[in-house]
Length: 220
Ligand code: SF4
Image (cartoon, rainbow, N blue to C red; front, side, top):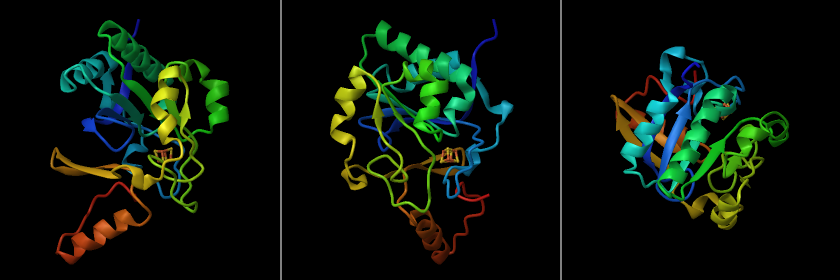
């Protein structure tokens, strides 16, 4: 049988701005939805050269989190466009949680409508604790915490998800930290959900200090 893989844009530990607690962040490569205003346009083109085996990704998760993450957030890119790899990852995370008696939750973003996920990917939803579905809509106001636009609900899917996310369903964006910055591989990574105009403001500020940003993920 073929070893399950995922095309991966990036993985990071700890992420503290995309769900409660100290989390593993996994961003897949490839999204055909192309929401206008998406800040992660570097994740749009599929790239087989970025494929990683799910086994290696799970080993990395256990190592960096010292076997004690409070959550895992999967985003992208569009995770559900790599359904086989996503399934293998979710099954692997469940097996890890059971084997080590851990209690981390798994939250997944998707730009697909909730109805589409329910009809085409019910098997994957059954492996998640919560999902944030629906495409990003740039002309709508910013959503509540961890959401880019107001149309994106936070949907708990399991008993663990209902317990962990009850407090956050409609919490304002300001209830948590919004952005994290890291430097890896000679690049600055901004993790989180920026407020409207935040990235343009960062760019203008850099420009005013004589720093021109030549490659940014919020335009192509
Ligand atoms: S916001 Fe998400 S679903 Fe929309 S284009 Fe960007 S990566 Fe794709």
